[in-house]
Image (cartoon, rainbow, N blue to C red; front, side):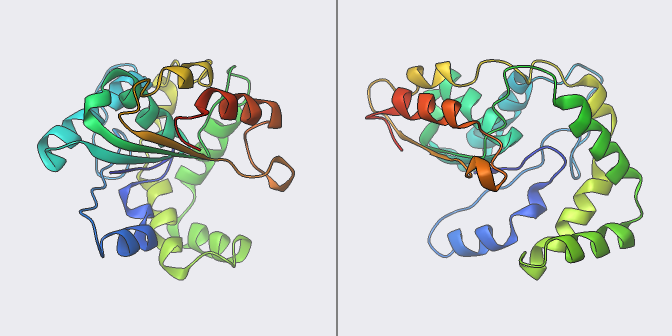
Length: 209
């Protein structure tokens, strides 16, 4: 089960889906307020998004699933793994949006609002220009997802910034599943500070990577 990041959508995994689907059932779904998913008139929390994900695992996978989450999606997958470990067979957190305070969210929200108002053709041209190494199949879904985002999601988001690293110690204490965390190098633009990465490695020792 692939869980996309803030401002993306289920369509933003084309190459990954193609690769994994050769040997596995691959499930993608939109977080509420993203892609084709409606946004309920309630506050948006990671717990609520994880509850949505639990429904996907129950109804579609119908068995414990390997959760692969990117950015915000990693927080959602982590929360589900902590509260519903019986639903998880493996956990992969890719560039998780581990932020301990709310200082960066206003800037991220501002950028996403600007992208949301930008014409599709301009978005497509910008991503092609700014990220020439991206596979061509990823450009159009990226541009489309920015236009699909319900901007009210950004207004209703709450509780995204907290201590996400310490709870790693509680993941699968009896070894029910392995946890893998993929962190970009900080000097190359990775969003996770080095000290936080070291702490995560310490807490996950013997439970994953």
